[in-house]
Picture 1 (tube, rainbow, N blue to C red):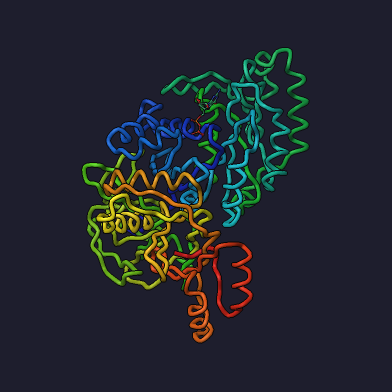
Picture 2 (cartoon, rainbow, N blue to C red):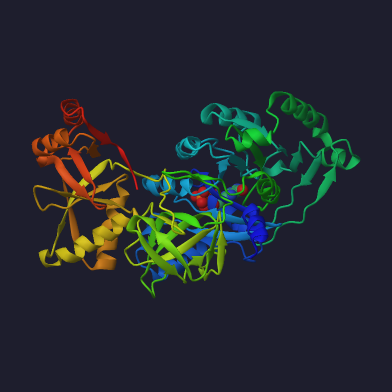
Length: 528
Ligand code: GDP
């Protein structure tokens, strides 16, 4: 690629994630998006593919049993003249940490709302995460083929609950059995509802002009009412403003039904047009321009055993600038080492393929043999570190013990790797040989035990332990820090990344300790 083309390629990228509450239709809409990308002809294979994999990779059957998506994946597909990178966010709230990090790797988000249910709590949480970075949000109100709530009420709810202005782009004509289509408020076009089934996307039947005879025929008895409604909507709702959308202050809203393949195309057309191309990103030293020539990227996720034949782990990298070229040398900044990468993979429609070139906005997978950690930065030699990819202090703790004490080496290794992946956090107290596992959600413990057994052949049991929370500690004052370490030695532990933590048995203990050691900093999150 000449440099001119690289710029063009970057401008084509649209890298995003879907935020929604479980069951709102994220999986269904993902299938239809990929179908629109024409990469797979039969929608319905997204879940199917996951299940195929689960058949070969055992621990994923846990995910199947629970009906949740523990892992997240990446899908790339072309649409119009754009290249769309869709990052899947795990659906279960136990994995909010993983989701959070995924949201650090995107430039915008698509919010899918179940029209019958409105804004649900998981959506609120994810939205709050997006707001931290002013991520632009486009909304899709799903399930118009059912009796949903009053669309005006839904817009009010989006505005009130999520604190973001909502600008309807199209407006539904009826709902449920009487759903007739959507009317685009900006182009004065009706898209007539024709359910597409499975892999079929219904042809786009349009009626130009609400004033037209065809529109009147379609709406029939409801014509006058609908015209009144549109007048009301135009008067009472926000106008779409691109600037405000890009600033994360206003969300364009589309109505449709993912299951019937309707309205998704209109939404995707708007999305690829308006959503931001790769954005600039901050490092500890400077802001990296997404369009600069020199390559850089960071790791936001590590996933184990995607390909059971290789039992490898894949580190997911968001490319932040420049171009990855097969066989190139990159600096692994944390280790201060140059590595030659010839076998990075891309995720065309969810399948892994060797990638020759990738630009800003793309996600590539690096084979990880234990050297790569979440948050690691790779560059073409520059000593910078991307910021804003935190670890959260776990809220639940258990002591982990082996049934067979001879296997402690495997246990250590397993826990170390699972913590590098971000699946759990481990803490090793300074005063004893306990191993403490920390989690943000209780389900994580089950997953860890399952994977230890499945992948590392160790049977571990959990025991309750009196830890309320963990705080990463540091200080600029060496003397005060030494004093703190001496006095609090019983509560100190090293985490999986080698960082010192204070394990507080109670909330009261934590605040007392903070008071007694004012020169020590207690951090609830740790930047990778
Ligand atoms: P996820 O949990 O957000 O991934 O949701 P899914 O895509 O798995 O959808 C949850 C359920 O809602 C499934 O039974 C879907 O078939 C159904 N569903 C998704 N979209 C629609 C829609 O537009 N209309 C109707 N009636 N059902 C839908």
